[in-house]
Structure formats: C-alpha cells, structure tokens
Image (tube, rainbow, N blue to C red; front, side):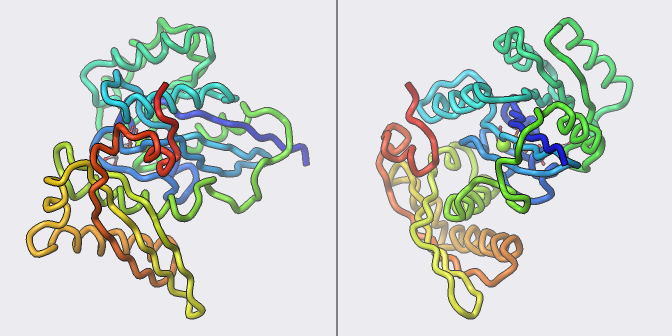
Length: 295
Ligand SMILES: Nc1nc2c(ncn2[C@@H]2O[C@H](COP(=O)(O)OP(=O)(O)OP(=O)(O)O)[C@@H](O)[C@H]2O)c(=O)[nH]1
Ligand SMILES: [Mg+2]
C-alpha cells in the first residue's frame, strides 16, 4: 500500500468550532469544547485514518488580538502550527455578523493555499450561506470551500476525503490506533478544565490552570487521579469551592463521570484548589500547559 500522511492545521477565530471538528473527524474527544471563547490553549493533535492516508489534525487556540500574556502565548502557538503544516484550513462560524477577523487571518497567511471551512451550517438558511461564501471569493489563496456542521457531522466526510488526497505520500508517523499525542495526565487536566469552562463564569475560567499531579492505576482496573486547580488570586478560591464546597463537588463529579466514560473504567478523582498568585505572568506555569511563554 502506498501510504500518505500529513499535518492539517485547523485555524480560526475563537469559538469557530475547531475542536468540535477535530473530535468529529477523529471520532473521539481529543480536544475539549465549550460555548465560551478561548477554550483551547495549546496545539493538540487529533489523528485519524482515511483509506491509505493518516491525517494529523492540528487543533489550535483561536486567533484574535491578544492583550494578556496567556492570550499572546495562545495566539503565538496557533501561528507557529502553520510552520510545518502540509494543509492549512480556516474554520469560519457562519452565524457571526462580521467575518473581518477571518479576513485578517487570510490576509496574514498571504499566498499560502487555504481550505475554507464554513461551519455551523445547521444554524443558517442555504441562501444566507451562499451570500457568506461569496464574501470570501476575493481571496485567491482559497483553494476549496466546504460547508459543514462540525456538531452534526454534516459534510464532514467530503472534507476528510479531500484532506486524504491533499497529504503527501509517505509513511504514517503514528501507530494506527493512536488518536492523539497528548499525554494522559494532560488529557485528564483538560477534561477538568472543560467543566470549569462550563460551570464557572466571567473571568474565572481564564484564570485557572489544572495540573494532574498523580495518575495511579490499580489491579482491579480503577484509576485514581489527583489534580490541582490553580487560581490566580486568593479571592477566586472561594468561588471555585462554592458554598459548603457545592461548586467543586459539581465540577468534580462531572469531570469524573466524563473520564470514566472515555476511559471505560472507574475513576476516583481528587481535586485540590491552590493559589498560584498571578500565574498567567509566570513562565514556569506555561510548561504545565504545554505552552511557550510568549516572546
Ligand atoms: N450549532 C452548531 N454549533 C457548533 C458547531 N460546531 C461547534 N459548535 C459549538 O460552538 C461552540 C464552540 O466550539 P469549539 O469546538 O469549542 O470551538 P473552538 O473553535 O475550538 O473554540 P476555541 O478553542 O475557544 O478557539 C461549542 O458550543 C460547540 O458546541 C456546529 O456545527 N453547529
Ligand atoms: Mg478549541
């Protein structure tokens, strides 16, 4: 068999549906998803096979005008993913009122060929979709346009077939059954962070970092996972804990349940909230997330 393999970078504004798309293509949850912007913080690989092609999908943090250090690190990670990409794709949320931010991303990519992915088509009428597609016509670096719903899976297989043709001939870089490059401990930290994004509000999820300190497997098949939730200021701790620990219990049980389902075994999850004063400005903390401190 003449195999093919390549890196397909998934770029887009925050909340465009990049992680949803990667999970849908891989057929498993490799990257966390939330209704809030800036959920994904680092580059995450989702690996999948179509025919003779191994597609290495690179989920990235959303691209926007960053202000804070963490935001700058995230946007930097997204752009750096393009360096060794075989295919660059741009996911656009068609429910947005303006596509200016997506146009800016396309301009920055200059002459590099881009696959345009219009996402969330389940939310707009067909006529409106054609008007939106027309707005991207002036970008001559767009090689193909796909219209999909990452959520329902509509249009996904045509996209996968296209990616499979676009990657170069060469050996597969990962074992056939590998779905991501993410270490288990980081993956488990992400599952908890997803719950923090779902259950906490305003600025709080953006000031939280989760570290898996210990992952212990027992002979009876159960797993014990210890994690630390770092907040950036003292005042944030009581909010994460909630009244009589109500909030942390709810976060813990939802994360534990999700881990149990995905790992298909019993998980015992222990969460501890600690204060790491002003951690978003501390380079050492970035390593825990797999991010470089912004330059
Ligand atoms: N209706 C609809 N919602 C979608 C679709 N794709 C994604 N979403 C929703 O859009 C929200 C954002 O999805 P994500 O996959 O987290 O978006 P992202 O681009 O990875 O976001 P960041 O990581 O923050 O940059 C979630 O609430 C998804 O359920 C779609 O095709 N249709
Ligand atoms: Mg994401």
